[in-house]
Image (cartoon, rainbow, N blue to C red; front, side, top):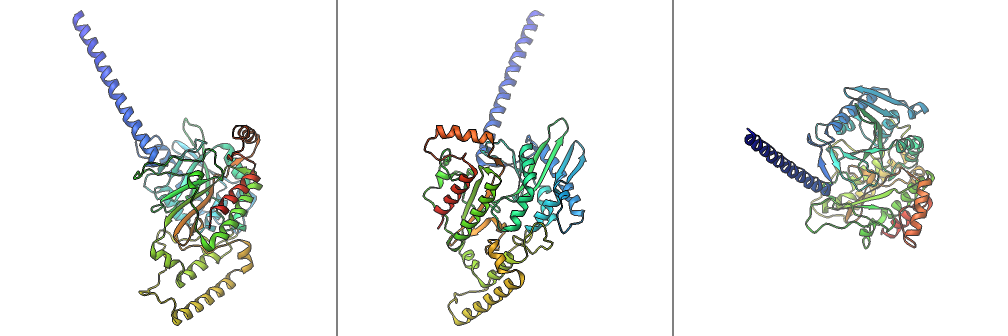
Length: 451
């Protein structure tokens, strides 16, 4: 009996060791897969993912929240009550809260977004994607399956700051409808059973659509800790590079350069007045196809682009029509094309047609909006393309441009960080500086890196 007991004991130890080794192998395999996912930057949040149940709750909660907002009457003017509104909806296992929903509904409308399309992207059957970021805030980033919208977790302090500045944020887009600032489309919180409340915001992706983007940069206008080691040639890793990586390159915009310089100045001045810093100029680019180059300045396309750029005030607080700057057709938008089998741009017939078309454009501008308002609002000729407020076409490249991460206030903590970095990086350019200097530095970067 004793011998049999010893054999059982030995067998039990061997079994435990075998199970332990198998468990270790599984953990190592999972760790390797996770590291590979991190390198790729995006991966689907499936049933095995730690955030699967959370994202399922988010989809359901957002669908119901948007549905309730859509069913409410839209008022012509926003009130103080709209900015302080809070919608609370109970669900099985969690509570969803939506903040200032009438304000964001007006804002989405001013961008030409339909509530149905917005709801469809956020609550579609397709799995959310997780975006792995090198953000120091340790925030979680989720991307809708169609890659149109980001969901990003924020601290309670950051959300309160956003709601506090929301009237000024909306007024800035009313004054400058073609602003490069990130488009924040909703603020929510979710409290799940036995878990702490999570706050998150919904943003329009600057890099949409991203299928052909070949380069991505996050620019702060300084050099300290602003380098990303490139992956080997042929790697499929999705990388976002930084300032030092961009050195030696330029943004070729030709006639649109002056617009970009002016809009960067306007947007960073607004952020300076909010006393914020550490925001980034997000930049992506892709080569233009030959047909895209010709379409940009075709007569038919010029009319479409002019209507899009000028028609309507683009006011987040007063607009009721869908014909506003930034309007795009849901999923089926396309560029008007001319049936030109040969290049006849220099013939008298085409020259006459172009003159007549430009006269029509001038008539539309004068009847829809005072040209002085167009200049004062620094509008540009928007491309006939999805996500037009963040897209600019140069002679050879299409650029995706936006200003993101606008929640860092220059308070006591940042002032102490500035003093510490001043001693550590004496004579070098680092990120943490006063909002005034930060704004000027980013404007200078745009000026010196564009032609």
